[in-house]
Length: 255
Image (cartoon, rainbow, N blue to C red):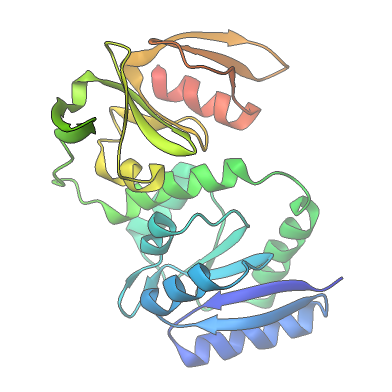
């Protein structure tokens, strides 16, 4: 069965080189589309069925590719590509995400594709969260101004809520802000967008449903080998169990 791939690359020569290498390495991957701008990619991902694999250059002519991840929930693996950029490479190493460095060599691409093929049947939730962590590190300068308050709608009223009064944001069909006084109020932002709006030193993404104020984490309980079960205050309505990788990451964050 053919693996459908999409390439995001604004340099024609780099795109052609990548397609050539893919064809040399495996006939199992078919490049169904190549996109060159954030705008073009947003339209494509909003209107087309998502592929099995994405090759994504970080820097495109009209922005960075992480702008796409903030607007569209992409739940397939991405192989990131970057020119030598010390800051970007440091961010990759911090989050543990693999990447391809330009100019791409056949050996590096073979290794990336082999890793993808070995893991393509696994759930990619961990990858999705890591990419959003990476987006914050690459996109946000040190002097960025994060949101200090939100104006939330409750019935016919608007309620100003300071960020410290929010225990967590969660998705349950709609996205809600759970306040420390236990009220749940809908908010007009996707979790991916909220993650880029709040200070990552205060709010962390536990999974695809939860963006949590660190102060709301009350207990970490070992469950399955290497995994943690998390208790929040106010209590979340379903059990929160993290993967082994996310559990290791959380323990490092909270030390």
